[in-house]
Image 1 (cartoon, rainbow, N blue to C red):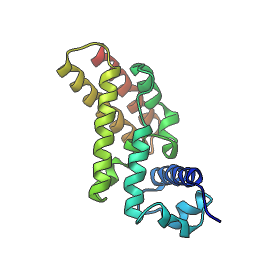
Image 2: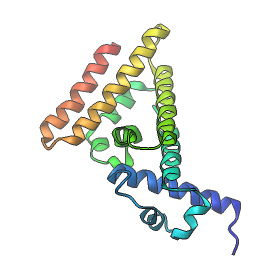
Image 3: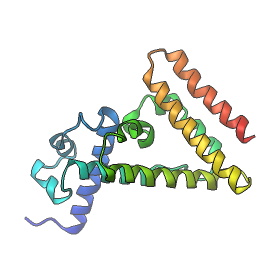
Image 4: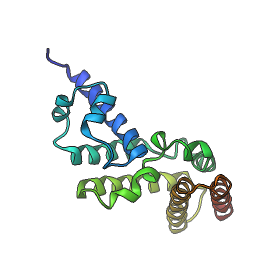
Length: 182
């Protein structure tokens, strides 16, 4: 039975969503193509109708995930609070692809690195637009610094086994960003 274009597009979106979650939970190397396809409710054989290889899946998953990851409605302080919250820290599979995958990108293909680069550029631009009025140089500096601090805080907060220090990292980073942006 031939699959419609609409169903193909839906299947592809489902594969990308599942791969995104699994990669963030387990890492790129710990997730197999068969595992992604099973979790998406599809057969392993259908994979090659969408992707040329696992490396292609990684790069396209990053592009898909990073395109969907954003500041939101322009309320930057609300975005900071939700990003630096224990709920986000404790749910990497449903969290930010940058915090979940950035450290592992250096071991991936040029296509995956390019997807991360484009996602980073887009996120910095979205943050710049959401920041209070400042000069363009100050806005860009604040966007890059804030985003780097936020991503780093989540990575560090997830990496340790001390819940109090983990919460403190999130809280103090949020307070520092609020102070910097005044």
